[in-house]
Structures are given as structure tokens and as C-alpha cells.
Image (cartoon, rainbow, N blue to C red; front, top):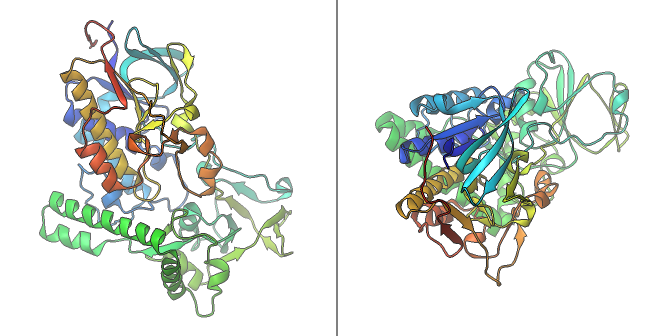
Length: 490
């Protein structure tokens, strides 16, 4: 029985485009389509429209390994990242493979036919597409809504309350008093981007986060580009930056007290004389228990020094007509309140799966090599690092999946499924990460095991050894042929 495509990719963000590029270069004979629910590529980088949106990783590691990042800016805004993704689409001729306005609702696997039937909503109609392999590139958060805790009395507030995930196009904050609730990556991005136009902007945080200044332009990367070909300069810069990321992470885990002192010293140097550093920039947790927030060229600290931005560490008691009443009794007056209170996570983009009519309970499955699920044939997904650039891992996952598909072709198999039959495996949460957005939702995600291919590595070096250099065949995989011949419809 034929299929519509060899591979269906769900999502045209950085992961889905990356998978498409790998397929065209490594398996050029494969038919595939990229199904995108929205009307544009880019995922996060097109969805989020709040002021100043940018990467919190350098683009020499956040970019694809196969495509050099050639901008002078190492920390880049959404416009530059989208331009980079559009170039990748054009260079690999992915435009003909992308179907916009196609929302994947669910997928059903048939062992007899060795194929997925994917239910897709396009406009008001729901139809089916079939494929041999399904790849989820939907990221990890809910595109429909961000995390917005309930605040007592918010209906009494006479101003406007907005969430960064749904930034209003008509929001005019010129000359307004703005309070941003939150101290994570979104808050420290928004505040310096808005500060010069507002009357004043305040970051209201329940507790401090680690904030690290980094140069927006990488002098080593730009110096190498001046004397070396782009590909070689990119490869060297990427290797250096991967090593630097890992060094900072390892030092944070092995010597947290030393790293706390170092980060505090860097922060104090950036702030005005006499600023209460330990009140507003001394977190209760150790570095890299949660992700470090990056501020390019110390822009957040610059606005604080200039008096255009301030930090308040307190808890919200309730909203009032004029602003926010804090538990300390202070009232922060505001015209606009931005709730930069985080994301909601969503496993597999909310797509439901079934195997031979039985629903897949995602949080009862075990992850294989950070990319497949036990008991779910011919299915893979992309989930990047929490302690380094997302795309570092996505590149390796896409590469390994291409190797796996080539192996199946060479051995006459049409089905592969992970099976965990090791009785010594201990089950653990997929992510060992203390960030609130993870802890709120980690129970919805698959689990990892204590050893072997069932662990979720958060080390690029370990993943390179496992996904790039390690063998495709493994005791945890079962290969088979379910159909007498593989026929692919044009």
C-alpha cells in the first residue's frame, strides 16, 4: 500500500526546517512535507512580537552546523534569525515542501500497513495524509497561551494588562509607566527595549534570577571571519563557544559558590554605586539550577544606571485601579502591566498518537536517545538542550534519524520501534531542571531511564558520541518488515 510521503515533519520552526535541510542533503530521494499550522515559517521567532525579542544563546551555536552564521551580531534579534531561516529554506528548496495552514491534530499508526495516517486540519476541513515516518518539530511549549497566574483584583486595574506571547500590535507605551512582572529571559529582554520610550519601566520580581552580560558582537568570531573562509571561521567559533558554554555549566555545577561570587562581581560592576545587589540580583538557587539570563552588552544594567528602569523585589498582593499593591504595602502605579510570567509546556505540540487503535499515553513512555518513544514505531521528535543552545541537539537528532532511515533501507526494513526490556532501568523525569515552567508540566512528558540509550543527555559531547559516532543498531531497537514491498506514491 502506497503512502503520500516517506516523512512528514510537524512544524516549520527552526527544528522542522533543520530536519528538512538534512533530508534534502542526506537522503535526497525521500519524499517529505513540512506541515505548519501558522501562515509563516519560524515558529517562536515569528510568533513572538514583543519589543527586543532576541536569542539568549549565541548564533554560532544556535545556528545550524551546516549553515554558517555570518552576521556581526552573535546575540541576534528575531528579524536576523528569521532571515537566516529563510535563507536555509531557499538554499535547500524547502518552499515546495511546506504546507502552511495545516494543523496536525493526531496520528494513527497501522502495523499491518507500516504507515502513519495523520489527521490534518486545513481551514474548515480535516483530511488524512499518510507517511512512513513522522517527525515532531513542535518545540516544547503551548503556542496558544502563555502562563498567566491569577492576580487578585486585576479586573479593577484601569490600565492595560498584556502577555508577551500575545503582544498587541496597537500597544503604545510611549511616555507610559510600565511594570513588567517577572525576571526571566523575556523580562530582561523587554525592559531595555522599551525603557527609552516609556516614562519609566519597572521589573517586579518575586525573587531574583542570574543575569549575565555578554558582548552582542563576538570579537573572536568576527576576527576569524575577516581572515578565514566563512565555513572554517564558523566551525572554529562554534567549537570554541560550545566549549565555553560547557565550561561555564560544569563550573556552576562543581563549584557553585565560586560561580555565585563571580556572577555577583560582574553584576555589581554593571550597577550604580550603592545599588542593593544582594536584594535584587542574588538568587536563592545555584547557577544553572535554572537557565542563566543573558543581557547583550549589559543593556539591562545600562538602563538601570540611566534611571530609566528600576527593579523591585516583592510579591503582588493585588491589583488596584492605579497599579499593583505589593505585600510590603507599597503601591506601584502603572499604565501598562506586562505579565512576563513564563510559558506553558505542551508535549508534542498537543498532537495525539495511537498505535493500532490504542492511544499512546505520552508520560507512560520512555525516551530512546532523546528522540524516540518506546512502543511508538517510526516516530521521532526534536527536543533541544536546557543548558546550551537548542539547535546543537536538534542537528544531531536530525542527522541520526537520517542515518537510521538509511540503515532501514539498506537492510530492507520498514518499521523500527524502541523497546525497553531492561529490568534494571530506574525511571526518572525527562528533565532534571528546576525552572518553574518545567516543574509545572514535567509530569506530562515522557520519562527517561537511569542508564544506556534511555537517558536524556544534556551534554553535546555525549550526544555527539551517541548520535553521530555511535552505531545505529542497538539492543533497544527492534527492526522489522511489515509489508512485502515499499511503494512510495509521487
